[in-house]
Image (cartoon, rainbow, N blue to C red; front, side):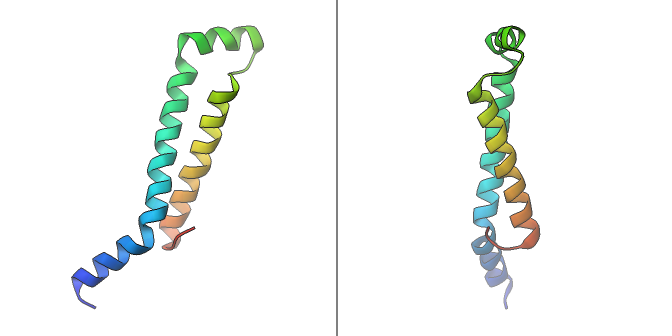
Length: 78
């Protein structure tokens, strides 16, 4: 195989895990920003836990990031 074919094959196999990784990191970042907002801190103080949206962003972000990393390590789409 030539170098161009190997490069093309690499992106064909790994675009989905790479997309999951990027999406997961974006969700984690957004969830972290929401978690640190002043309103979220007040809500935690009153209810002793963050709101549902923040939890879902963190959970889905973690799942997508782990899935993307595993997909990249295994070398095939999930």
